[in-house]
Length: 609
Ligand code: F6R
Image 1 (spheres, protein in one colour):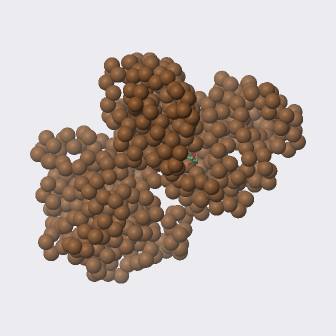
Image 2 (image 1 turned 90 degrees about the vertical axis):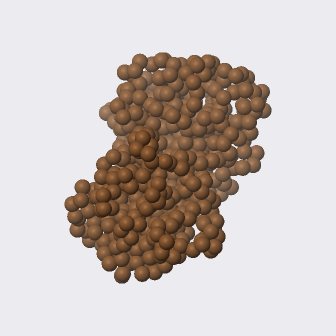
Image 3 (image 1 turned 180 degrees about the horizontal axis):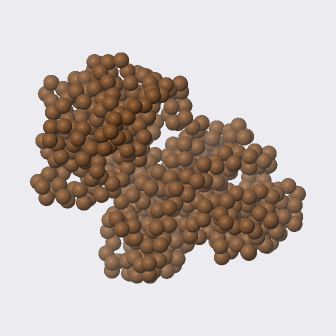
């Protein structure tokens, strides 16, 4: 996730900005930059890669001044490069902007500004903001920013400077966090508290739709419409480690709670303004190429493979094309039948997993077109695939993947809908209804997260066991596999995910008095069948925790404890039903006293075969 720092005061801003950015390094980034108002006017320095690259440039040509903004970028629109790094400026180079979030309508704004003579140098959505503000400036930067934000759709936290008013730093928050740090004779902005904690513990937390105007002598808070706000200062008593996790005990929990935002960002500009269809500009296949697809192979490892299992159902249901999902380490050694009419989808959070990359290369060698679903722009997988759908989940720090998995599901929904639209395999009305339900998912995840603590109790009961089962049918089984992996990898409890109807072919022998079984009974059409299977394990003494969709009244009679998730289309339910399982794994790991974020024997990115 990108990081923002801003400073106005009496000290050399360059040092404060660099130190602030260093405190945000843990979040992951691929380039960095500063804009400072110096004796020569507004000056910008940027560098791809680690902060030290920027520092080396600043050693040669320092930016001396008392007001500035800084940024660490995690690429979303455009590869990591000097030119795509923030801060961005306009053609007059009098305005400078740092931005976190995504501008959904940046293409339309860019076209409009280009027609007015603006020339763009980067691939980013952010550059549009600096041009937009410049085009609206009539002697008052606050008014220009207020006008600009009325034109922008999406999520944004902004820091804005102009050479015309060199004592002011303007900050905006809209669906992307931003805080204001208040010092003596100096004030700060930060996307996160660690960025400013060394300098002040007094902060204003901006709410969505609010902005701030900072000078060295004070801070004015107002709404984006310009109505002044008075607010109590918040005193931060966190240490730096707590601050890095935004007050959560672990990155995993923070990332579980970031999922609604990750869903919204990943859908972002990919749903058209009418809200009835999907626009996937990054997929460059022609309609003829889409129509020529005879089979799809989805290849991935671990959690990404589990996303691929859901992806299979999505594509088969929406596009009516046969799909095989395979573990990358198996795929290339089984002589898969790949033809030029095979579309291969590789899924990888990191984009660097050796097995996935090798499978991608094998697919390309056999002449298949490859679409990558990845969280890292510029990763090996992204560079080598023909088309790339980036999941905008932001960096995932915890080893156990959560928000990356669910963002991969969102990417599959978008891609499945795109295929269906192009092939005409579904009625426009049906597609519109799926899109509409898709947009509801973030709020529904929020509802689940509000009850997150409920899983502490389940987890404590589960944590004393060494073996348990997850069961489900259809998509519930695909989610059960992910729930089981999550539990294994961080709690070290052995668990198995089983298709509920398959237990009777042997595994039922392992069900004895008190064995915990997590039963997913979300899929409407399979509900009764699943309940019968639950009765089979109950009859052998299992203790069953059930998950069902809101409004369902039957499951409660068949299980020992039950949790309901909000109702959605069965096809979309994995994006909800996995969340309780992530929380269960998290709290079980905690109950066992494990290091949740750094499980034993696992690495975040597996770059060996
Ligand atoms: C589990 C987990 C791993 C990864 C797998 C693939 O929580 O994180 O199973 O999903 O190693 O990694 P990527 O997606 O980076 O290719």
